[in-house]
Length: 109
Image 1 (cartoon, rainbow, N blue to C red):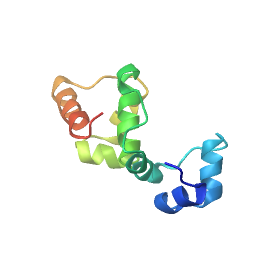
Image 2: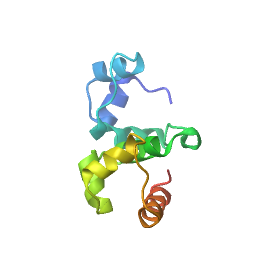
Image 3: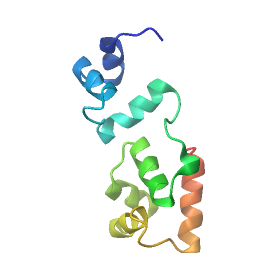
Image 4: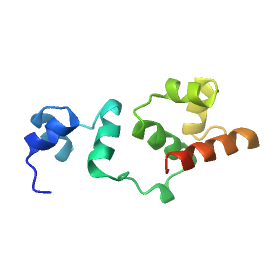
């Protein structure tokens, strides 16, 4: 795209030093910047086909700039339930599984 770090920083809403640090793996973007990064890239930079169920949930919520409590509220479940799914400790019931699959389809995950 031939953009400078300062150009990308302005688009995403961060400082150019932040872009440099992300590019050099010095730190990772905060959740609140993930939607802007995805919008800038025009794609979700994850290979979701190889992710576990818990990883898919985490990527979906991060891509939307949500924390676990916010996503749990959207799904109508307790946050501890969502966290146990993310950790792979439990799996959702059939009804909740279908709700999550619909959520993933809605947001292309």
